[in-house]
Length: 170
Ligand SMILES: [Zn+2]
Ligand SMILES: [Zn+2]
Image (cartoon, rainbow, N blue to C red; front, side, top):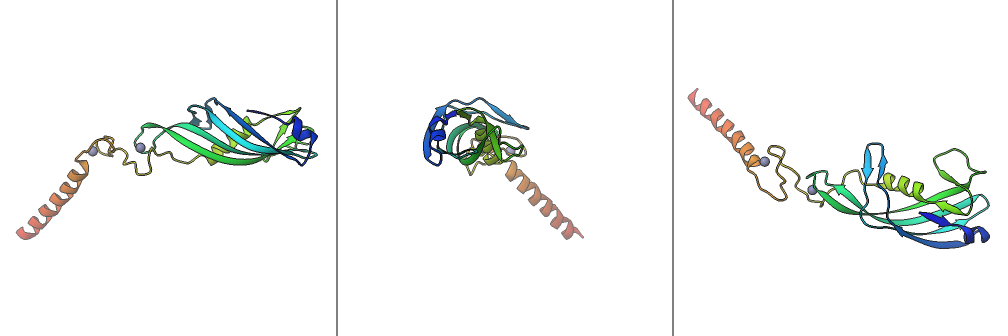
């Protein structure tokens, strides 16, 4: 995900659009691994100043996700935007806000992945109304019906009946 800043470096203050398309490697951040399906696309603009470049981007990826409710794998389209600062290595101070670079090419991969993980939804659902798995027998309630919920209701009802019966006896 390399961006040539050759032109932007010659005309500081001018906005140069760019576009990138390609495949991405799996990424792991802490306990979370993200897998990509097909190609990712990125469009944006770069503008230079005396110390570095500001890069904006609109990214579109497809994630190989697993539904948090029913455990089914599914393809999850995900779009996000970012604006990041890339500072020439000689001016760069150690902080989390900017990325250092050298030469006439900026590698956007690190900033792209940082923003992706920052903006990633906390949970992925195969559909907003996914019914999930039955907590009792484990069937996928999107595809099968089970009588667990009914049984639970009935046993509660039976207990009530038994209770009222006992009351009558007294
Ligand atoms: Zn689901
Ligand atoms: Zn069940």
